[in-house]
Length: 130
Length: 117
Image (cartoon, rainbow over the protein chains, first blue to last red):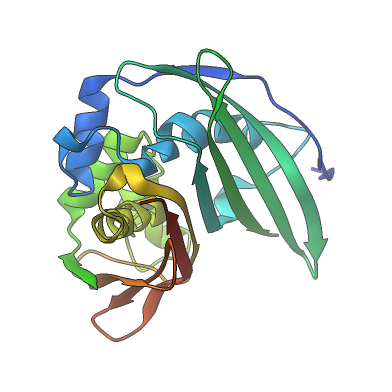
């Protein structure tokens, strides 16, 4: 299967409700106190997690999931969302390049609140070896 | 300085898979993990990041103070490994973070966080 560079490609927005039980389960899994609210890296779910499947299942992008490595991750927060909020996340391919048979894809996700104010930006670097 | 050591277990990795929705079989199924060249199941990089974030949050005065967290996933973590997560102030609103396994190998590198008071 041919692989097209898809830098600049934007995927559809995804709405996600930040539910109490899901947050508590996540907090326990990382040894955080559920009483402290939404753990910062719950962004792995509400931001990166809900949008990355668009990239992985995009036939045009042709990402070989079996050879994909999550190499770097950054989250930037304007604020942390509250339990019960619904946030909206949109993923895009910020860069897509290949060097010596290794493909580097930077996937960015912007998450905003119900009023459109920014909440979080996720930046993931995926390395795909062919 | 804030420090936390965690010995990873299959149960913890499975709990993170459940909580995060990341059910990639490399984290859950030894046979599958070996078929793709791994020694067996490995911990999610994002689980390591989650654990590191709790140390960063403590050093920052609480999770709500964190404004940025970034790192490179540099090494595999398998069940039985003990990783020490560490946060140290590095100037105004900045933390330098490390995650080192029981062999002294860094499993997360280039890890920093920014926070607001």
